[in-house]
Image (tube, rainbow, N blue to C red; front, side):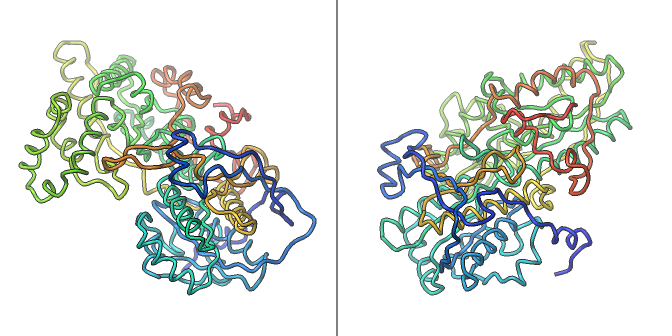
Length: 552
Protein backbone atom coordinates (compact mmCIF):
# COMPACT_ATOMS: atom_id res chain seq x y z
CA UNK A 1 0.00 0.00 0.00
CA UNK A 2 1.40 3.39 -1.03
CA UNK A 3 1.54 5.96 1.77
CA UNK A 4 1.43 9.74 1.60
CA UNK A 5 3.63 12.08 3.64
CA UNK A 6 0.60 12.77 5.86
CA UNK A 7 0.05 9.04 6.47
CA UNK A 8 3.68 8.55 7.39
CA UNK A 9 3.49 11.40 9.88
CA UNK A 10 0.14 10.27 11.30
CA UNK A 11 1.42 6.71 11.76
CA UNK A 12 3.72 8.00 14.48
CA UNK A 13 0.87 9.64 16.43
CA UNK A 14 0.30 7.75 19.67
CA UNK A 15 -3.37 7.96 20.68
CA UNK A 16 -4.00 9.03 24.26
CA UNK A 17 -5.84 6.77 26.71
CA UNK A 18 -7.89 7.46 29.85
CA UNK A 19 -5.88 6.92 33.04
CA UNK A 20 -7.98 3.86 33.92
CA UNK A 21 -6.88 2.10 30.72
CA UNK A 22 -3.19 2.99 30.83
CA UNK A 23 -2.12 0.16 33.17
CA UNK A 24 -3.77 -2.74 34.92
CA UNK A 25 -7.58 -2.55 34.85
CA UNK A 26 -10.44 -3.78 37.00
CA UNK A 27 -14.17 -3.15 36.76
CA UNK A 28 -16.61 -1.34 39.00
CA UNK A 29 -20.22 -2.44 38.54
CA UNK A 30 -23.14 -0.06 38.90
CA UNK A 31 -26.83 -0.69 39.46
CA UNK A 32 -28.90 -3.07 37.29
CA UNK A 33 -30.30 -1.39 34.17
CA UNK A 34 -33.52 -1.51 32.19
CA UNK A 35 -34.45 -0.62 28.62
CA UNK A 36 -35.47 2.94 27.73
CA UNK A 37 -39.01 1.72 27.01
CA UNK A 38 -41.10 -1.43 26.47
CA UNK A 39 -39.41 -3.04 29.48
CA UNK A 40 -41.36 -6.31 29.53
CA UNK A 41 -41.14 -6.87 25.76
CA UNK A 42 -37.36 -6.26 25.68
CA UNK A 43 -36.78 -8.39 28.81
CA UNK A 44 -38.75 -11.25 27.26
CA UNK A 45 -36.73 -11.07 24.03
CA UNK A 46 -33.35 -10.79 25.82
CA UNK A 47 -33.65 -12.79 29.06
CA UNK A 48 -29.91 -13.56 29.19
CA UNK A 49 -28.59 -10.04 28.51
CA UNK A 50 -31.26 -7.83 30.09
CA UNK A 51 -30.83 -5.89 33.33
CA UNK A 52 -27.03 -6.13 33.49
CA UNK A 53 -25.17 -3.36 35.36
CA UNK A 54 -23.25 -0.41 33.96
CA UNK A 55 -19.49 -1.00 33.98
CA UNK A 56 -16.73 1.50 34.72
CA UNK A 57 -13.01 0.70 34.46
CA UNK A 58 -10.74 1.73 37.29
CA UNK A 59 -6.98 1.25 37.80
CA UNK A 60 -5.88 -2.06 39.33
CA UNK A 61 -2.63 -3.09 40.97
CA UNK A 62 -1.76 -6.25 39.07
CA UNK A 63 -1.82 -6.99 35.35
CA UNK A 64 -3.25 -10.42 34.61
CA UNK A 65 -2.27 -12.54 31.63
CA UNK A 66 -5.26 -13.88 29.72
CA UNK A 67 -5.46 -16.10 26.64
CA UNK A 68 -8.18 -14.90 24.26
CA UNK A 69 -8.70 -14.71 20.51
CA UNK A 70 -10.99 -12.00 19.19
CA UNK A 71 -12.83 -11.44 15.91
CA UNK A 72 -13.74 -7.96 14.66
CA UNK A 73 -16.39 -6.83 12.18
CA UNK A 74 -16.95 -3.40 10.62
CA UNK A 75 -20.64 -2.99 9.85
CA UNK A 76 -22.53 -0.33 7.90
CA UNK A 77 -21.27 2.96 6.47
CA UNK A 78 -17.72 4.16 6.97
CA UNK A 79 -16.76 6.57 9.75
CA UNK A 80 -13.37 8.15 10.49
CA UNK A 81 -11.54 6.27 13.24
CA UNK A 82 -12.56 2.67 12.51
CA UNK A 83 -8.95 1.63 12.04
CA UNK A 84 -8.09 3.07 15.45
CA UNK A 85 -10.76 0.94 17.12
CA UNK A 86 -9.03 -2.07 15.54
CA UNK A 87 -5.61 -0.72 16.61
CA UNK A 88 -6.90 -0.40 20.18
CA UNK A 89 -8.26 -3.94 20.03
CA UNK A 90 -4.98 -5.30 18.67
CA UNK A 91 -2.74 -3.58 21.22
CA UNK A 92 -5.00 -4.47 24.17
CA UNK A 93 -5.33 -8.12 23.10
CA UNK A 94 -1.55 -8.46 22.73
CA UNK A 95 -0.99 -6.67 26.05
CA UNK A 96 -3.04 -9.36 27.81
CA UNK A 97 -0.93 -12.07 26.16
CA UNK A 98 1.42 -11.76 23.14
CA UNK A 99 0.12 -15.11 21.87
CA UNK A 100 -3.44 -13.81 21.58
CA UNK A 101 -4.77 -13.34 18.05
CA UNK A 102 -7.09 -10.84 16.36
CA UNK A 103 -9.04 -11.85 13.26
CA UNK A 104 -10.86 -9.44 10.95
CA UNK A 105 -13.91 -10.66 9.08
CA UNK A 106 -13.97 -9.22 5.57
CA UNK A 107 -16.63 -6.93 4.10
CA UNK A 108 -18.84 -6.75 7.16
CA UNK A 109 -21.05 -9.31 8.92
CA UNK A 110 -21.22 -11.30 5.70
CA UNK A 111 -17.56 -12.20 6.24
CA UNK A 112 -18.48 -14.03 9.45
CA UNK A 113 -21.28 -15.98 7.76
CA UNK A 114 -19.19 -16.78 4.65
CA UNK A 115 -15.98 -17.50 6.62
CA UNK A 116 -13.94 -14.77 4.89
CA UNK A 117 -11.28 -13.44 7.23
CA UNK A 118 -7.69 -12.38 7.72
CA UNK A 119 -5.46 -12.43 10.78
CA UNK A 120 -4.46 -8.92 11.80
CA UNK A 121 -0.73 -8.82 12.53
CA UNK A 122 1.58 -6.15 13.85
CA UNK A 123 2.99 -5.56 10.36
CA UNK A 124 -0.50 -5.17 8.91
CA UNK A 125 -2.05 -2.94 11.58
CA UNK A 126 0.91 -0.55 11.55
CA UNK A 127 -0.02 0.48 7.99
CA UNK A 128 -3.47 1.62 9.12
CA UNK A 129 -2.98 3.38 12.46
CA UNK A 130 -4.64 6.82 12.56
CA UNK A 131 -5.91 6.51 8.98
CA UNK A 132 -9.44 7.03 7.71
CA UNK A 133 -11.59 4.50 5.91
CA UNK A 134 -12.47 0.88 6.58
CA UNK A 135 -10.20 -0.56 3.91
CA UNK A 136 -8.20 -2.76 6.30
CA UNK A 137 -11.03 -5.33 6.35
CA UNK A 138 -13.87 -3.56 4.52
CA UNK A 139 -17.47 -3.18 5.64
CA UNK A 140 -20.91 -4.39 4.59
CA UNK A 141 -24.59 -4.14 5.42
CA UNK A 142 -25.54 -7.79 5.86
CA UNK A 143 -27.92 -8.05 8.83
CA UNK A 144 -27.16 -10.70 11.43
CA UNK A 145 -30.65 -11.79 12.49
CA UNK A 146 -31.23 -15.37 11.37
CA UNK A 147 -30.38 -18.54 13.32
CA UNK A 148 -28.72 -20.03 10.22
CA UNK A 149 -26.34 -17.05 10.12
CA UNK A 150 -25.52 -17.40 13.83
CA UNK A 151 -24.77 -21.10 13.47
CA UNK A 152 -22.75 -20.64 10.28
CA UNK A 153 -20.70 -17.94 12.05
CA UNK A 154 -20.16 -20.26 14.98
CA UNK A 155 -18.39 -22.76 12.71
CA UNK A 156 -15.55 -20.36 11.89
CA UNK A 157 -15.52 -19.04 15.46
CA UNK A 158 -14.85 -22.58 16.68
CA UNK A 159 -12.31 -23.27 13.92
CA UNK A 160 -10.28 -20.16 14.84
CA UNK A 161 -10.77 -20.68 18.58
CA UNK A 162 -12.32 -17.21 18.87
CA UNK A 163 -13.65 -16.30 22.33
CA UNK A 164 -15.37 -13.02 21.46
CA UNK A 165 -16.62 -10.88 18.58
CA UNK A 166 -16.47 -7.09 18.45
CA UNK A 167 -19.02 -5.51 16.10
CA UNK A 168 -18.27 -1.90 15.18
CA UNK A 169 -21.42 -0.24 13.87
CA UNK A 170 -24.36 2.09 14.27
CA UNK A 171 -27.69 1.57 15.99
CA UNK A 172 -28.97 -1.16 13.65
CA UNK A 173 -25.63 -3.00 13.67
CA UNK A 174 -25.41 -2.88 17.46
CA UNK A 175 -29.00 -4.08 17.71
CA UNK A 176 -27.90 -7.09 15.65
CA UNK A 177 -24.88 -7.49 17.95
CA UNK A 178 -27.26 -7.67 20.92
CA UNK A 179 -29.40 -10.29 19.18
CA UNK A 180 -26.28 -12.35 18.45
CA UNK A 181 -25.02 -11.98 22.04
CA UNK A 182 -28.39 -13.15 23.37
CA UNK A 183 -28.46 -16.17 21.05
CA UNK A 184 -24.95 -17.34 21.95
CA UNK A 185 -25.66 -16.76 25.66
CA UNK A 186 -28.93 -18.71 25.50
CA UNK A 187 -27.15 -21.60 23.77
CA UNK A 188 -24.29 -21.40 26.32
CA UNK A 189 -21.77 -21.38 23.46
CA UNK A 190 -19.29 -19.33 25.48
CA UNK A 191 -18.89 -16.69 22.73
CA UNK A 192 -19.01 -13.07 23.88
CA UNK A 193 -20.25 -10.22 21.68
CA UNK A 194 -19.30 -6.57 22.27
CA UNK A 195 -20.39 -3.49 20.28
CA UNK A 196 -18.73 -0.14 19.51
CA UNK A 197 -20.72 3.05 18.70
CA UNK A 198 -20.03 4.23 15.15
CA UNK A 199 -21.92 6.65 12.92
CA UNK A 200 -21.08 10.05 11.51
CA UNK A 201 -24.80 10.91 11.73
CA UNK A 202 -24.43 11.38 15.50
CA UNK A 203 -27.76 9.67 16.27
CA UNK A 204 -26.25 6.83 18.33
CA UNK A 205 -26.13 8.94 21.47
CA UNK A 206 -27.76 8.89 24.91
CA UNK A 207 -26.96 9.36 28.61
CA UNK A 208 -24.17 6.79 28.35
CA UNK A 209 -22.85 7.45 24.82
CA UNK A 210 -21.79 11.08 24.56
CA UNK A 211 -20.96 10.87 20.87
CA UNK A 212 -20.52 8.24 18.19
CA UNK A 213 -17.11 8.03 16.59
CA UNK A 214 -16.56 9.73 13.25
CA UNK A 215 -18.95 12.61 13.98
CA UNK A 216 -16.10 14.88 15.08
CA UNK A 217 -14.00 14.36 11.96
CA UNK A 218 -16.88 14.29 9.47
CA UNK A 219 -18.41 17.55 10.70
CA UNK A 220 -15.02 19.27 10.67
CA UNK A 221 -14.44 18.02 7.11
CA UNK A 222 -17.88 19.16 5.94
CA UNK A 223 -17.46 22.49 7.73
CA UNK A 224 -14.19 23.08 5.90
CA UNK A 225 -16.00 22.50 2.59
CA UNK A 226 -19.00 24.64 3.60
CA UNK A 227 -16.58 27.38 4.64
CA UNK A 228 -14.94 27.17 1.22
CA UNK A 229 -18.37 27.37 -0.47
CA UNK A 230 -19.39 30.30 1.76
CA UNK A 231 -16.18 32.18 0.95
CA UNK A 232 -16.76 31.67 -2.76
CA UNK A 233 -20.38 32.76 -2.25
CA UNK A 234 -19.22 35.92 -0.49
CA UNK A 235 -16.69 36.54 -3.26
CA UNK A 236 -18.88 36.03 -6.36
CA UNK A 237 -22.01 37.42 -4.64
CA UNK A 238 -24.41 36.01 -7.21
CA UNK A 239 -25.34 32.45 -6.14
CA UNK A 240 -27.47 30.75 -3.53
CA UNK A 241 -25.78 27.50 -2.52
CA UNK A 242 -28.07 24.69 -1.38
CA UNK A 243 -25.96 22.13 0.53
CA UNK A 244 -27.42 18.75 1.49
CA UNK A 245 -25.62 17.02 4.35
CA UNK A 246 -25.70 13.44 5.58
CA UNK A 247 -28.14 12.68 8.38
CA UNK A 248 -30.99 10.42 7.38
CA UNK A 249 -32.69 10.16 10.76
CA UNK A 250 -31.38 13.21 12.61
CA UNK A 251 -30.01 16.68 11.89
CA UNK A 252 -26.95 16.56 14.16
CA UNK A 253 -24.50 17.02 11.27
CA UNK A 254 -26.39 20.00 9.84
CA UNK A 255 -26.66 21.61 13.29
CA UNK A 256 -22.96 21.14 14.11
CA UNK A 257 -21.89 22.46 10.68
CA UNK A 258 -24.16 25.48 11.16
CA UNK A 259 -22.56 26.18 14.54
CA UNK A 260 -19.14 25.99 12.90
CA UNK A 261 -19.84 28.01 9.74
CA UNK A 262 -22.88 30.29 10.37
CA UNK A 263 -24.83 29.83 7.10
CA UNK A 264 -27.77 32.06 6.23
CA UNK A 265 -30.25 29.21 6.64
CA UNK A 266 -30.01 25.77 8.23
CA UNK A 267 -33.07 23.52 8.27
CA UNK A 268 -33.46 21.23 11.30
CA UNK A 269 -35.73 18.30 10.50
CA UNK A 270 -36.79 17.77 14.12
CA UNK A 271 -37.98 21.38 14.41
CA UNK A 272 -39.96 21.11 11.18
CA UNK A 273 -41.69 18.00 12.51
CA UNK A 274 -42.37 19.59 15.92
CA UNK A 275 -43.91 22.66 14.29
CA UNK A 276 -45.94 20.50 11.86
CA UNK A 277 -44.65 22.53 8.90
CA UNK A 278 -45.64 21.67 5.35
CA UNK A 279 -43.25 21.65 2.41
CA UNK A 280 -44.83 24.93 1.31
CA UNK A 281 -44.17 26.47 4.76
CA UNK A 282 -40.48 25.62 4.41
CA UNK A 283 -40.30 27.07 0.90
CA UNK A 284 -42.04 30.26 2.01
CA UNK A 285 -39.61 30.74 4.91
CA UNK A 286 -36.56 30.33 2.66
CA UNK A 287 -38.02 32.59 -0.04
CA UNK A 288 -38.64 35.30 2.56
CA UNK A 289 -34.97 35.22 3.59
CA UNK A 290 -33.85 35.34 -0.07
CA UNK A 291 -36.17 38.30 -0.74
CA UNK A 292 -35.05 40.18 2.38
CA UNK A 293 -31.36 39.74 1.49
CA UNK A 294 -32.10 40.83 -2.11
CA UNK A 295 -33.52 44.12 -0.79
CA UNK A 296 -30.13 44.73 0.83
CA UNK A 297 -28.35 43.94 -2.44
CA UNK A 298 -27.29 40.47 -1.27
CA UNK A 299 -28.44 38.08 -4.00
CA UNK A 300 -26.44 35.23 -2.51
CA UNK A 301 -26.43 32.90 0.46
CA UNK A 302 -25.85 29.42 1.88
CA UNK A 303 -28.58 26.97 2.91
CA UNK A 304 -27.85 23.72 4.82
CA UNK A 305 -30.31 20.84 4.42
CA UNK A 306 -30.21 17.48 6.28
CA UNK A 307 -30.68 14.57 3.86
CA UNK A 308 -33.56 13.10 5.90
CA UNK A 309 -35.63 16.29 5.76
CA UNK A 310 -38.37 14.81 3.57
CA UNK A 311 -39.23 12.12 6.13
CA UNK A 312 -39.69 14.72 8.89
CA UNK A 313 -42.30 16.80 7.06
CA UNK A 314 -45.31 15.36 8.94
CA UNK A 315 -47.60 14.74 5.97
CA UNK A 316 -44.78 13.10 4.01
CA UNK A 317 -43.70 11.15 7.10
CA UNK A 318 -47.18 9.65 7.39
CA UNK A 319 -47.08 8.79 3.70
CA UNK A 320 -43.68 7.07 4.06
CA UNK A 321 -44.92 5.01 7.01
CA UNK A 322 -47.85 3.69 4.98
CA UNK A 323 -45.58 3.09 1.97
CA UNK A 324 -43.17 1.12 4.19
CA UNK A 325 -45.99 -1.14 5.38
CA UNK A 326 -47.39 -1.45 1.87
CA UNK A 327 -44.04 -2.44 0.32
CA UNK A 328 -43.26 -4.83 3.18
CA UNK A 329 -46.59 -6.63 2.69
CA UNK A 330 -47.05 -6.44 -1.08
CA UNK A 331 -43.53 -5.87 -2.43
CA UNK A 332 -43.62 -9.16 -4.34
CA UNK A 333 -46.65 -7.95 -6.34
CA UNK A 334 -45.19 -4.50 -6.90
CA UNK A 335 -41.49 -4.87 -7.72
CA UNK A 336 -41.77 -6.23 -11.30
CA UNK A 337 -44.29 -3.64 -12.52
CA UNK A 338 -43.23 -0.82 -14.85
CA UNK A 339 -42.95 2.74 -13.50
CA UNK A 340 -46.36 3.94 -14.61
CA UNK A 341 -48.14 0.82 -13.29
CA UNK A 342 -46.21 1.05 -9.99
CA UNK A 343 -47.48 4.61 -9.48
CA UNK A 344 -51.06 3.55 -10.20
CA UNK A 345 -50.69 0.55 -7.87
CA UNK A 346 -49.53 2.78 -5.00
CA UNK A 347 -52.28 5.37 -5.52
CA UNK A 348 -54.91 2.61 -5.51
CA UNK A 349 -53.61 1.15 -2.24
CA UNK A 350 -53.06 4.33 -0.18
CA UNK A 351 -55.47 5.93 2.26
CA UNK A 352 -57.19 9.07 0.97
CA UNK A 353 -55.05 11.50 3.00
CA UNK A 354 -51.73 9.88 1.99
CA UNK A 355 -52.88 9.52 -1.62
CA UNK A 356 -53.49 13.27 -1.75
CA UNK A 357 -49.97 13.94 -0.40
CA UNK A 358 -48.41 11.48 -2.86
CA UNK A 359 -50.16 13.07 -5.85
CA UNK A 360 -48.97 16.58 -4.94
CA UNK A 361 -45.28 15.61 -4.77
CA UNK A 362 -42.96 16.31 -7.71
CA UNK A 363 -42.81 13.15 -9.81
CA UNK A 364 -39.13 12.47 -9.11
CA UNK A 365 -39.60 12.65 -5.34
CA UNK A 366 -42.72 10.47 -5.45
CA UNK A 367 -40.77 7.93 -7.49
CA UNK A 368 -37.89 7.86 -5.01
CA UNK A 369 -40.28 7.31 -2.08
CA UNK A 370 -41.77 4.28 -3.82
CA UNK A 371 -38.48 2.53 -4.62
CA UNK A 372 -37.12 -0.49 -2.74
CA UNK A 373 -35.91 0.13 0.82
CA UNK A 374 -32.37 -0.28 2.12
CA UNK A 375 -31.46 -3.48 4.07
CA UNK A 376 -32.83 -1.94 7.29
CA UNK A 377 -36.21 -1.07 5.71
CA UNK A 378 -35.53 2.66 5.33
CA UNK A 379 -36.34 4.98 2.43
CA UNK A 380 -33.10 5.65 0.54
CA UNK A 381 -33.31 9.38 1.16
CA UNK A 382 -29.76 10.04 -0.04
CA UNK A 383 -31.08 9.35 -3.57
CA UNK A 384 -33.68 12.13 -3.29
CA UNK A 385 -32.28 15.42 -4.56
CA UNK A 386 -33.85 17.41 -1.72
CA UNK A 387 -31.52 20.35 -2.26
CA UNK A 388 -32.65 20.68 -5.89
CA UNK A 389 -36.30 20.13 -5.05
CA UNK A 390 -36.19 22.96 -2.48
CA UNK A 391 -34.27 25.41 -4.66
CA UNK A 392 -36.62 24.75 -7.62
CA UNK A 393 -39.66 25.38 -5.45
CA UNK A 394 -38.08 28.54 -3.96
CA UNK A 395 -37.43 29.81 -7.48
CA UNK A 396 -41.06 29.15 -8.45
CA UNK A 397 -42.22 31.09 -5.38
CA UNK A 398 -39.88 34.02 -6.16
CA UNK A 399 -41.04 34.12 -9.80
CA UNK A 400 -44.63 34.32 -8.57
CA UNK A 401 -43.72 37.16 -6.20
CA UNK A 402 -41.85 38.93 -9.02
CA UNK A 403 -45.02 38.94 -11.15
CA UNK A 404 -46.88 40.38 -8.15
CA UNK A 405 -44.08 43.01 -7.76
CA UNK A 406 -43.19 41.68 -4.32
CA UNK A 407 -39.64 40.70 -5.33
CA UNK A 408 -37.14 42.18 -7.76
CA UNK A 409 -33.93 40.36 -6.90
CA UNK A 410 -31.87 37.86 -8.86
CA UNK A 411 -31.85 34.18 -7.90
CA UNK A 412 -29.36 31.63 -9.21
CA UNK A 413 -28.92 28.32 -7.37
CA UNK A 414 -26.01 25.90 -7.13
CA UNK A 415 -26.30 22.47 -5.48
CA UNK A 416 -23.99 20.31 -3.38
CA UNK A 417 -24.32 17.01 -1.53
CA UNK A 418 -21.62 16.54 1.09
CA UNK A 419 -21.63 12.87 2.02
CA UNK A 420 -18.83 10.60 0.97
CA UNK A 421 -16.34 13.48 1.31
CA UNK A 422 -16.43 13.05 5.11
CA UNK A 423 -16.98 9.35 5.77
CA UNK A 424 -13.39 8.24 5.22
CA UNK A 425 -11.45 11.36 6.18
CA UNK A 426 -8.28 10.91 8.24
CA UNK A 427 -9.49 11.00 11.86
CA UNK A 428 -9.04 14.11 13.94
CA UNK A 429 -7.00 13.85 17.13
CA UNK A 430 -10.28 13.49 19.03
CA UNK A 431 -11.51 10.57 16.93
CA UNK A 432 -8.05 8.94 16.88
CA UNK A 433 -7.97 9.02 20.71
CA UNK A 434 -11.65 8.19 21.20
CA UNK A 435 -11.61 5.18 18.87
CA UNK A 436 -8.40 3.78 20.34
CA UNK A 437 -10.00 4.05 23.79
CA UNK A 438 -13.15 2.29 22.55
CA UNK A 439 -11.10 -0.61 21.17
CA UNK A 440 -9.16 -0.89 24.42
CA UNK A 441 -12.41 -0.78 26.42
CA UNK A 442 -13.95 -3.53 24.28
CA UNK A 443 -11.05 -5.84 25.13
CA UNK A 444 -11.41 -5.08 28.84
CA UNK A 445 -15.11 -5.97 28.67
CA UNK A 446 -14.15 -9.27 27.06
CA UNK A 447 -11.39 -9.89 29.62
CA UNK A 448 -13.96 -9.42 32.39
CA UNK A 449 -16.38 -11.95 30.91
CA UNK A 450 -19.00 -9.49 29.60
CA UNK A 451 -21.29 -9.98 26.60
CA UNK A 452 -24.11 -7.91 25.14
CA UNK A 453 -22.31 -4.69 26.12
CA UNK A 454 -21.26 -1.65 24.13
CA UNK A 455 -17.90 -0.06 24.88
CA UNK A 456 -18.27 3.56 26.04
CA UNK A 457 -16.05 6.54 26.86
CA UNK A 458 -17.41 9.52 28.82
CA UNK A 459 -16.31 12.99 30.00
CA UNK A 460 -15.06 13.60 26.46
CA UNK A 461 -14.72 17.38 26.65
CA UNK A 462 -11.90 16.91 29.17
CA UNK A 463 -8.32 15.89 28.34
CA UNK A 464 -8.28 12.24 27.17
CA UNK A 465 -6.41 11.18 30.32
CA UNK A 466 -9.51 12.29 32.28
CA UNK A 467 -12.00 10.38 30.13
CA UNK A 468 -14.00 7.62 31.87
CA UNK A 469 -14.20 4.29 30.08
CA UNK A 470 -16.56 1.39 30.59
CA UNK A 471 -19.49 -0.47 29.10
CA UNK A 472 -23.27 -0.19 28.84
CA UNK A 473 -25.66 -3.13 28.28
CA UNK A 474 -27.04 -2.75 24.76
CA UNK A 475 -30.51 -3.70 26.01
CA UNK A 476 -30.51 -0.52 28.14
CA UNK A 477 -30.74 1.55 24.93
CA UNK A 478 -33.49 -0.47 23.26
CA UNK A 479 -37.21 -0.07 22.61
CA UNK A 480 -39.75 -1.55 20.21
CA UNK A 481 -40.27 0.18 16.85
CA UNK A 482 -42.08 -0.68 13.63
CA UNK A 483 -39.67 -1.85 10.93
CA UNK A 484 -40.74 -3.37 7.61
CA UNK A 485 -44.32 -3.63 8.83
CA UNK A 486 -43.65 -5.34 12.17
CA UNK A 487 -42.53 -4.38 15.67
CA UNK A 488 -38.87 -5.11 16.36
CA UNK A 489 -36.40 -4.38 19.17
CA UNK A 490 -34.01 -1.59 18.14
CA UNK A 491 -31.67 0.91 19.74
CA UNK A 492 -33.53 4.18 20.07
CA UNK A 493 -32.11 6.87 17.78
CA UNK A 494 -31.11 10.19 19.32
CA UNK A 495 -32.67 13.12 17.47
CA UNK A 496 -31.73 16.78 17.86
CA UNK A 497 -33.10 17.94 21.22
CA UNK A 498 -34.96 21.20 20.62
CA UNK A 499 -34.53 22.01 24.33
CA UNK A 500 -30.81 21.16 24.26
CA UNK A 501 -28.03 23.73 24.47
CA UNK A 502 -26.64 23.16 20.93
CA UNK A 503 -30.02 23.92 19.31
CA UNK A 504 -30.68 26.84 21.64
CA UNK A 505 -27.32 28.39 20.70
CA UNK A 506 -28.17 27.99 17.01
CA UNK A 507 -31.71 29.35 17.40
CA UNK A 508 -30.41 32.44 19.21
CA UNK A 509 -28.15 33.35 16.28
CA UNK A 510 -29.95 32.26 13.11
CA UNK A 511 -31.96 35.45 12.50
CA UNK A 512 -28.72 37.44 12.57
CA UNK A 513 -27.07 34.95 10.17
CA UNK A 514 -30.08 35.17 7.83
CA UNK A 515 -29.89 38.96 7.54
CA UNK A 516 -26.14 39.49 7.70
CA UNK A 517 -23.25 37.73 6.06
CA UNK A 518 -21.59 36.18 9.11
CA UNK A 519 -19.80 33.22 7.57
CA UNK A 520 -16.96 31.50 9.41
CA UNK A 521 -14.29 29.71 7.39
CA UNK A 522 -12.96 26.92 9.67
CA UNK A 523 -10.30 25.68 7.26
CA UNK A 524 -8.97 22.11 7.20
CA UNK A 525 -9.08 19.69 10.10
CA UNK A 526 -5.93 20.44 12.09
CA UNK A 527 -3.57 17.90 13.64
CA UNK A 528 -0.61 20.07 14.61
CA UNK A 529 -0.59 23.47 16.22
CA UNK A 530 -2.08 25.21 19.24
CA UNK A 531 -4.35 22.93 21.24
CA UNK A 532 -7.22 25.43 21.02
CA UNK A 533 -7.17 24.90 17.24
CA UNK A 534 -6.38 21.24 16.68
CA UNK A 535 -7.94 19.59 19.75
CA UNK A 536 -11.33 21.29 19.99
CA UNK A 537 -14.29 18.97 20.39
CA UNK A 538 -17.41 19.58 18.33
CA UNK A 539 -19.50 22.55 19.42
CA UNK A 540 -22.34 20.08 19.96
CA UNK A 541 -20.38 18.26 22.66
CA UNK A 542 -19.14 21.48 24.22
CA UNK A 543 -22.66 22.90 24.56
CA UNK A 544 -24.05 19.59 25.86
CA UNK A 545 -21.35 19.17 28.47
CA UNK A 546 -21.30 22.82 29.54
CA UNK A 547 -17.71 23.21 28.34
CA UNK A 548 -16.28 26.46 27.01
CA UNK A 549 -17.26 27.21 23.42
CA UNK A 550 -14.88 29.31 21.33
CA UNK A 551 -16.25 32.75 20.45
CA UNK A 552 -17.80 33.21 16.99
